[in-house]
Image (cartoon, rainbow, N blue to C red; front, side):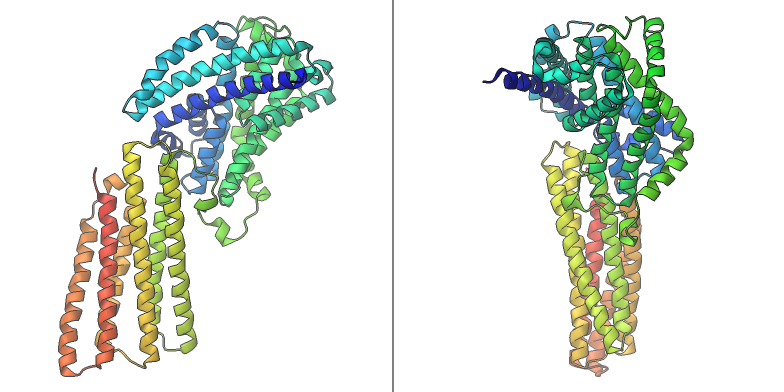
Length: 561
């Protein structure tokens, strides 16, 4: 094999090994946190400092600003967070992500963690065979941590060996601390961060290059600025299939990093000596201009840079939100609505967040079926042929929509169920899939009733006032049943009681019984024709079935484990 090609593959392999450890550790922490991750972020108040702290704390735990921001964008997409709330979380995530550079600088370059890697893996592997999933995840955290620093050690060895290779020739030959050179390293940092899909891994690589004496600190700091920019691409991609609010949340992240980078690159030559002063006098480290002190200098710069920018931007958040709103235009009412577009969504993150989104979609499903109840009411009283046909067509479109919603939500939840789930999440997904099927049945029943009305009109059969009164009373009760269902779907499922829903369902049953009794009497008395009676009987029986399905969904919501 060509030596230069081998050197390149060696470098890429060592980077991949480090990235694998970081990813494994980050994902395992997210699994351990479970739904607490979404709860930590979604409970943010309008207090901007609280949002910043939660974004910083969450990112420090999961070691991934991209994961925090993608979850945040997902919560905005689902309507759980506002743009202003999400913007403060995003600012905090930029501070939290700097923890990795400190771990690398203090542990990776100051201790022989390499020799502890295999013992740590030996400690973590037994956890993988535990029955409890959270215990398994702890094992993954330990193994991920070991692989991260094992990979860093391999990367250090690799970079030292490649100092005479052409693989890093560009970096070694561009040591001029000019403005144009700094801009070129900003671009390199952005591309590297995007390719690795991790600014933390990209910065660790930059620290290694400095530690090996290949890159001067000025170029390294410019790369760090670019790596912050590269991390914004992940959020933009994640928001691409989301609604306008999700896109704006991702745009806030991009604007924050772009604006911060612009003024910092202009002052980089002034800031660098100040970073050196902080490293030497506050943290008692070697000069950042030396290979031994540069990794810590990068960590100090990374944190200082983000903290200063957050302090500046936190007072300007409303303007940042306004700028993001202006730069991402709404495409109309459909884009303004909170929707998920499950089958093409790039927003699927943790099972807990995905389940939260599915619950939000269930609310919309219930609202759709409630609207079919209102459409049927109009159909019942409409006499004009053209309007009648338009109402039939509208019912057909809404029934098709219920079919599509069932398929999309069920497919989405099936994908979620294929990942690592707690027993609680697994039960919740099964219940949601059952609820989706029940709601789709409701849509089928309303469309079946619309076809009954169409056949009634074709046969020139009419209802007397007594029939219309009973049907309208049932429609009124169903309206109330849907209102209760929607309220229950919006509530915390564990807190839901169904006594009110049960009362309405019993009233619908009573109306069905009343209709049945009156129907038999009216048929005996010749109050209406046999055909009219058949159409009427099918309608009130179907309305009672709708009540049963709505009640069934309420019972699933309130079901206790």
